[in-house]
Length: 148
Image (cartoon, rainbow, N blue to C red; front, side):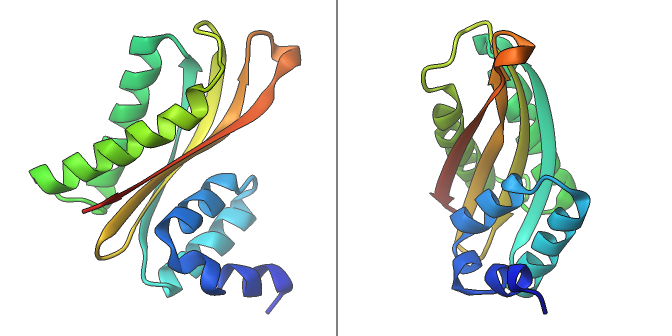
């Protein structure tokens, strides 16, 4: 086993927040698959999706909410119950705050989204790039964790 896999299999990924952020930070399919194997071995449920667009209030918030809820329902991470949806929305809103700190209302975003759940907690991690112009891309991250 390589050192990367040993790291991912360590104590770090027992936390759904750390697990979600690690999964969102992956940049290659190989790294994502390694992280997914580690999360499966840790007993987590998870899903990964992506969103892109402008940061204007309606566009960004609606796209992220639709992507997170849809992916989580379709993958079986949550059920269509008030408790599950409520916890997922709270974690998503918290994660969006991290992304939107000091960002222009007309910036473009490209984000990878990871949702990870264990028996009592759900976490949403957002990681990607934002820019007003393609030459000014810089990375942003947000994390939200909520009890189910």
